[in-house]
Image (cartoon, rainbow, N blue to C red):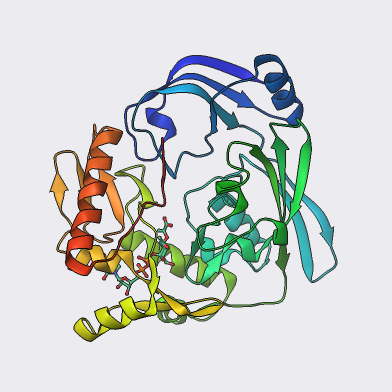
Length: 337
Ligand code: EPU
């Protein structure tokens, strides 16, 4: 079943809470809905909006916003140790994590409380606390708007990387994700290496799935603003990957600077954009209705009534200050429309 709305206000459909609208919004349930719509309407400009947690609208969107509504969760196979599940795009991400914890299934517990829909998770390969969605995804099923066919991509075909996937590149403007399949496990596999996770888990009595989920939720709540209270899109910027010489130069000057190895190379190093913004003196900085969050400098917030353009102006200012202070370029991870 497909529903169409014309001239729709998007304020309640984006976690930044910016006041913008779209010419049309189409809610769809199945691939057939999309096939009919693309065959009949041949839309020239469209964008898929899941939970609206990683999108910043900076103007009225003059195309069609496509929004999935199906959220069925199906167990495909259970061999006693591993369980394969298929989850449709509109399923809430954290509700899936909660279900997996309740069922005793390991694999996505470190991704607790990430504001996302399941369909959006593979696009930027959501990640936190040493885990990424790609570690549990086996297959992504999408509707191809060029051929009007349903396509299934195996994990290895999705070009997953740090906040990256094929859906941000070759398949941008082509694929509409319908469902994601995951393999979860009954054998415990705690992943406690990141930051304060181990300390928080031990404080709760050890590495059970429930304790890990609670620890992660506690850490996130202490640093990240709740979009229901303060509009935001999580990390606004990606952590920059720089040449090792750049990291060495900065480490001479700032020996305490957080830095991380990049998988597969010793030539590049990942820096913490939050730390750079913080050290540039911008944590808690406010300009009108927008600001840099006072507990996690990677997050830009809407104090109420902000437009997308105000957020962009702040983001540009943050980038230029970081560039001046450290000669490092940072860039948004949020989709800007
Ligand atoms: N830091 C500061 N000041 C800040 C923020 C961070 O000094 O204001 C320092 C921290 O002390 C730490 C380092 O920077 O040494 C890294 O900080 P943190 O562990 O909070 O993680 P992050 O790199 O800032 C990334 C993800 C988050 C994810 C956390 C935990 C990106 C862009 N962000 O943030 O993801 O929750 O790691 O794994 O990779 C999101 O994508 O929306 C998101 C919140």
